[in-house]
Image: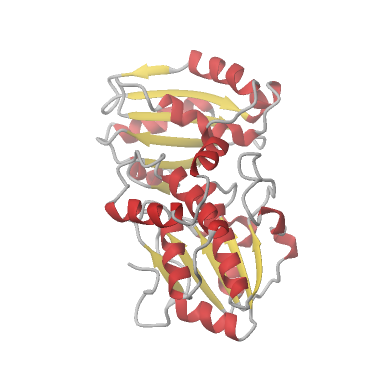
Length: 331
């Protein structure tokens, strides 16, 4: 599905957004909870594009309203507003990179309260929500759909927009290493590079910059990793917590990068990191090297995602959580 298309035979996303801009409507753009580079890059790029078309735009994401240091530098990040500052019934609500309404946290009710809700997403587990949907499970990142929307809106790409789009594109494709990368992914990347962005600096900020405490945390977490070759096509897993991250002077979002280290284990098709949260739940990240559909596992346990990358939240204890994962992998 392209960004110019929509669900059913109703209005298109480009049409809704064009009308909103022309009429000076209030458009609220919302990324998912704890936004990553794709969610934030998509939100900020579309927000900037709509402002250039004359729309009144508020960009936000659910609580906790805190950005990791690795994303604070993105153009427009300083203009984000807390969820408490957005109107309860905006003219248009655009959800970006959220696989389900639950990923919008306390902002989910705006889907029904808005005059029109638009959902832009690339997760295979997306159930299909919102009045107008731009959902392409084959897209490597939501920013690719936003790039199409900007084209449809007649917004020319410049270095500011390209920085935002490239950040999301490089992050969700694993710097173009993941299987979701398609020929047109590189075509878009070439367009973005053509604006003169410093792609090496973007990658360095996203992937190659971390405080020293990260090394200490990484040592502890990888040191207790367990390999279970008899589970499915092989499982490697470990755990940490926001409390442990704090012991090393790190914010809780630093835990998100752990799974990208664990997934390199050659003997296991599935990598799993359990991240203990302050409220006692476990936020679980799953990755597959290709033989296992981890989105099926995550959906069975209340989450979602992609075939090779998915996650869910567990209220069980650590052993109960990993036992549930083992059971699903054995199916």
